[in-house]
Image 1 (tube, rainbow, N blue to C red):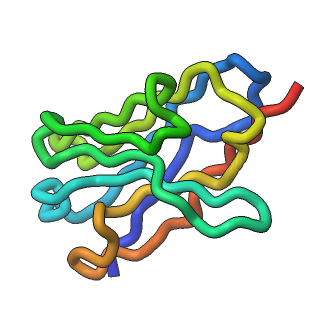
Image 2 (image 1 turned 90 degrees about the vertical axis):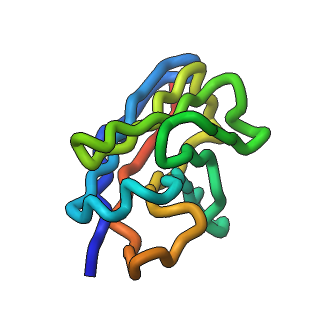
Length: 118
């Protein structure tokens, strides 16, 4: 079963930036939209952003619009989430997956922890 591997999280002060990466091993997934999701403590996982297979269409949740940028490099089977002007409410475990989820039985990875705190 194909699984995503997320990396790049860490502790950052409010207003700071981080760049998350997400890799997978199945090139068939490059034909589908890729999304980033997050789960804050005590809350359900929520969608953050998605990008089309060709990088031409990007969509964001209102809470991250104008601060986050999603992209992908299909030659590397890798997706990215550039996060700027981070806020404490962005603290969560961040995951990637297809958008919508469940395509080609891709499963959730372990995620990467992002903590925004002074």
